[in-house]
Each structure stands twice: as structure tokens, then as C-alpha cells.
Length: 296
Image (cartoon, rainbow, N blue to C red; front, top):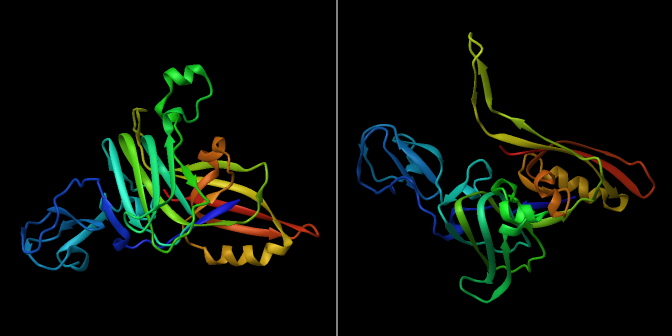
């Protein structure tokens, strides 16, 4: 079991992004009418009253209400249900600083991924990866010719990246109807060895209603993943692991219960632990039970 503890993201870390917004950019001094929707830096805002104002929406709750993240920043908002979207490609550059791992969570529609880590903006490439997703998860010749797009992997972990205080990440994704839930960069920490017998599932927030005539209708909503597992920890590491778990309570991190691609969908969770307990069962090893839940 590994975790990636994210570097705290701030709006100033986004250097550039090729994605577009669905709403016009807020312009200082413009006459806005009630209900008008605009975007500004990391947010989408709706006008509460008719006004002409020069205060940015995020600092003007009298005139604006925030509806959610802007498309540029949706993949950094720590809510994997909010996604950055694009039609055929997106290129995002961030000033990341020190980190050693990257996680892409809830990625759909992608054919290729390229990630470059440079020493400064436009500097020497320190690390690079290219990934072709069209051949991912193929198990037969039938899959090769008739692969279902839904069978593509949607979560990707990249580790072993050299740390650099001036590191900039450039992520380029190509495909069709792209959607990226979370773009996480941070530090990989090891808790222990995940045991067989892990239990996975979801909590579905969709609604089902049946009327008086027996007609059933559905409202499809978000869901969160659940993962229960046991992890063997060396007793020499118990203090370190316990303190790490204390420090990330109520904090979204990337939980990696297996390094194998065949288990990446059920055993990689971007979320938080609901509960954990540790049993010091052996002279050299302890058993830690974890209850994890992803963000919806």
C-alpha cells in the first residue's frame, strides 16, 4: 500500500492551459444583469443583482455567487467529480516545485498521454513519459479490433520522478471528448504490503423513483468508490505509519493498494480513510485494517 500526498495547489501554480471555458471572462466595470454567468481565474460565478462593479467576483459576495470551479482549474479542486474537459486535446503546464509522483484520476476519452517534467519553464527535460492508451487493457484479438472505449483504464500513476525545486510539469492529452477529474502531484509514501482479500464497491448517489402506476425513473448522479483492505506493516515502521495516518485525516490523498495495472480501477482510490485500526499481532509485523472512500 502506497499513498501520494498531494502538494498544496494554488492558482498561481497554473502557468498555462489550452482548455476553453463555456462562459465569458469577467471584465471589470461591465454592466452585468441578474443571473449572468461568467468565469474568473479558478471559478464560475453568477450575478446576484444588476450591477457594475470593479471588485473581482471571488471577493465580491454581495454581487456574485460561486457556482463551481472554472474549466481551467476543475482538475485541481480536490473533487474528482468536477472535471477539466476538452474536445480533442488539452495541454496543461504547472509550476510544481518539489514532488516525485503524479496521479491522473478519472481520465476519460484519452488516446495518448505525454508528461514532461522540466527544470524550470522551458528548461531541460528531467523526466518524460509517453503512453498510448489505445492498446491498454487488451486481452485478445477481438479486443484489438472491437475494443469498447469504456474498457480503457481511467487512472494512472507515475512514480520515481526526480525531485527539483524548479520543476514544471507539462501534461498533454489527446483523444476525443476528454475529461480529467484530478491532476495530482506530490510525494509517494509506503505504508506496507496489501493483503489478498481486499473488498471493493461503490456508493451510488443516483435516485430511483416509482410512481403510482409502477413506472420507474432514474436520476443518474455521482458515486464514490469504497475499498476495505488489510496492510502488513513492519513493527519498526509502526510509529511512522501511525503518525502519517494521523496527519492525513480528513485529507484527500491517492491510495494505491496495488502497483499492477490489472487492479488499477478498483485498487486506486483518490479519497480519504473513514477508519483504520492496527493490531500488533506478531513479533515483527502488525496488521492495519483500512476503510477507504473516494471523493464523488
